[in-house]
Amino acid sequence: MMQANKNAFPKNFLWGSASAAYQVEGAWDADGKGPSIWDEFVKVPGTTYKNTNGDVAVDHYHRVEEDVRLMAEMGLKTYRFSIAWARIFPTSMDEVNQKGLDFYHKLIDLCLENNIEPMVTIYHWDLPLFLQQKYRGWESRESIADFKKYAVTLFEAYGNKVKYWITINEQNIFTRMGWLTAQHPPKMTGEEKLYYQVNHNVFLAHAEAVLAFQDLVPGGMIGASFALHPSYAIDCKPENVIAKMDYDDLKNYWWMDVYAYGRYPKAAMKYLQTTGVAPEMKEGDAELLAEAAKHVDFMGVNYYRSETVEYNPLDGVDSSGVFNTTGEKGSMTVPGVPGLFKNPLNPNLPTTDWDWTIDPIGIRAGCRDITSRYDLPIIISENGLGAFDTLEEDGSIHDPYRIAYLAEHLKEIKLAIEEGSEVLAYCTWSFTDLLSWLNGYQKRYGFVYVDQYEEAVEPSLNRYKKDSYYWYKDVIASNGEAL
Ligand code: BG6
Image 1 (cartoon, helix red, strand yellow):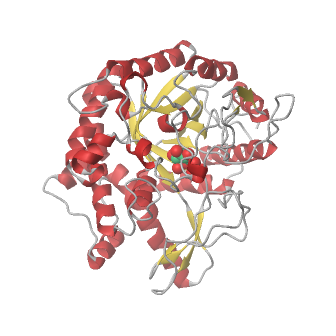
Image 2 (cartoon, rainbow, N blue to C red; image 1 turned 180 degrees about the vertical axis):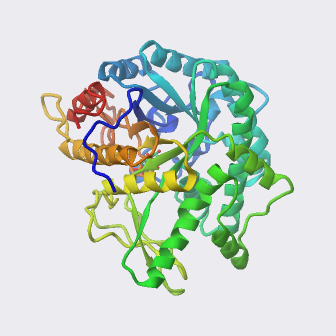
C-alpha cells in the first residue's frame, strides 16, 4: 500500500539476535543439569543428520563471556535465549538446582552490563526427561501446573532484570513434529487427536504463565513465539482459495487466535469435531484462555518462509514425505492434508539449499495480517538463512547471501512499520552458528562462524566473524539507515 522513504525504525528499536539452549549451550550434564527429552532423542541412531547432537553444541555454556563480548562489540540491543528447564529442575519439580539458576544470572548480568536487553524464552523444546517418563510430558494435564511452577521460578529469579519474556517457542512446530511426523520426541506418527490435546495442554500452560506473570513482573512484557507461514493460494481457482483459508485456520490461526483472543477458529474446530480429533476441554479452560489472552503483550513471530496452498483431494499427498535435512536442493517432497490442502513450492520464488522458500514480502504480509486481525505489537523473534558457509584461510567468511536475505526482510519490515504495524524488535536467527536440530552443524545461521562440524573429531570451537557480522553492526549503528 505504501512505499516508505523515511526511516521508519523507532529510536528504541530492539536490534537483536536469538538462540536456544539446546542448540548452543552444550555442557549437557554440567553443574547438576538433568537430561532433557532431546538429550535422549538424539542418541537414537538415525534421528538427526549424521547423528549430530547438542552434547557440546557450540559450548556457549563455557564461552558465554566471549559470546556476549562479541554481541557487545557488534552493538546488539537485545539477545533472545532460552532457559533449559532441566538445568533448573534436573530430576524433580521439588528441587531447584541453584547452579542452573546461577548460569542464567551470569548470562543476564553480562547482557545488562553491555546494554543488551535480555529476552528470555521459557520453553524451547527441551522438556526435562523425568517429566516425559513420569506422565508423558505435554500429553498429560499435569504438565500445566509444572510449567507454571517452572515459569514462576524464573519470574521470581530474573523478573527484576528481564523485561521481555516468551512463554513457548513454536508450539506449532514441536507438536507437529512430535506427534504427527515423528521427527521430534516423543517420535509419534499420525497421532492427530493427541496432537490437538497436547496443543490444548500447552495453551493452558502458556495461559497460566501469562497470568502468574502479571503480579510477579510488573512492567514486563510477555507473549508466545509462533512459527508463522503466511500463505498464498496458488491461483484464483475458488477451491484453492478455500484451501488457503483451511490452511490458515489450521496452520496459523489455530495458534495465534488462542494467544490473542483465547479461542479457537470456528471452521477449524468444526472440522476437528467432524473428524473426531478435537481436543477435550474441561470446565474453566475456555475462561482461562480468554483471561490470559487479555494480558498478552505482543505476538512473537518466527518467520523463515511463506507457503503456497493448493486444494488436495482425499486421495492426495499427506505429510509422510521427505523433509530435506541434507542440504541437497530439490529433495523435499510436497506435504499436505488429504481432502484439504497441499503446499507445493511457489514457482515465483527462489529456495534455499534446504528447500525453504525465500520470500521477504511474506514477512510484511504476516505483519499486516497480525496487525489487522489482532492489533498487537509484534516481536520478530527469529528470521534468518540457513546456508553452507566457507571459512577462508585468512579466517574470513564471505556470506553475501545471508546479508541479502536479512536486508531484504528488514526492508519489508520497515514497510510494514510504515503501514502501521508496531514492530518492537527484530531478532535474527542466530548470533553464533549452532546446532540445527535435525540438520546438523552444516546448516549455518550465525553472524559468527563456529568451527564445529560433523566431520571433525575435535573441532576447535573457535569463533570467526562473518561479513554479515560487520554488515549488521552498521545496520544497528545507523538504526536501519544503512540497509
Ligand atoms: C525455528 C526454531 O524452527 O527455526 C529454531 O525455533 C530452529 O530452533 C530454526 O533452529 C531454524 O530451523 P532449522 O530446522 O533450520 O534449524
